[in-house]
Image 1 (cartoon, one colour):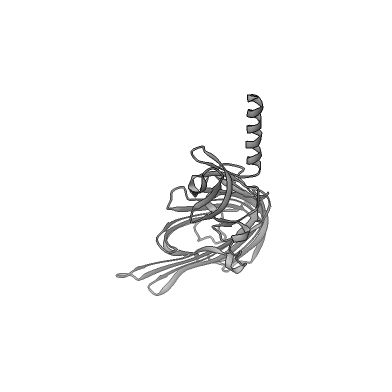
Image 2 (cartoon, rainbow, N blue to C red):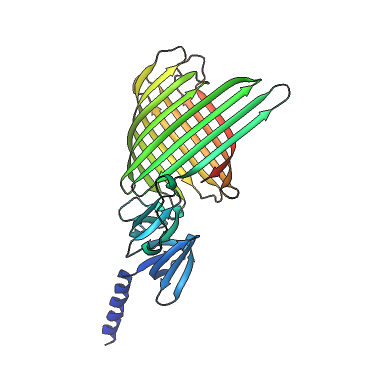
Length: 335
């Protein structure tokens, strides 16, 4: 009789788990019930044995739901689906790519969910401005402008980077660079995406009147813990360059890169990108590296430090150095 009673309890408990949302915590506890909402980093969870409780979001390790919920991400995008955690510290909607829990800012039921933002309203990103000056025996002004909008949904991602650097010495423009680049990622399955990219830039230091490129390839996303995201990608682009007093050139160029963004050193937000760009004829290759560190201040404002290093193994202009390196401090606003 005791054996039958024990089996009945086990079957009943398993049945409840199959028809309830389940969360596990960092301390190993496992709770079953119903997720009500996530607001302001507090998860409201309804249980049959303890009523409604609130749990700090950073204490959540895994989640699974039996009904679709609306999830809003830090990028501004929103999506509806069944929630699961293929790895501790990650969240996956149906069969899409998993993301770190740190990228989730809200969860709602469909009945009480806020309106999903439109295309124009679902962008996130930052705008940054840096300025330095020297007065005395010489007059030097340096200006840096950086704009990075981004939009991510359950099926795709758009990233744009526009930046400009000016250097004026004794009222004469010594050098300036301008660039705008964009990449569109289409998620094929969890962790795998197809991308197309485009670039246009000028650089007086290289005596580059205009460089344009466009192409595409494949990439993969990896969640390295709860607060670090890694992307690797590779493909092929078609490059066109026009240097001062030289003929315009056209060539095929490979691309292999890695991107990392992490909040491991909170409140610092650290991001870095590295790309190897070999030209498929002639033995020339370029390497581009950039990193940025943001320190949140108040009401969306932040202090930033940007570093970059651009290397060209065989610059077309004979009097141009192979390597350009710079550090820029900025004041920015995140939206």
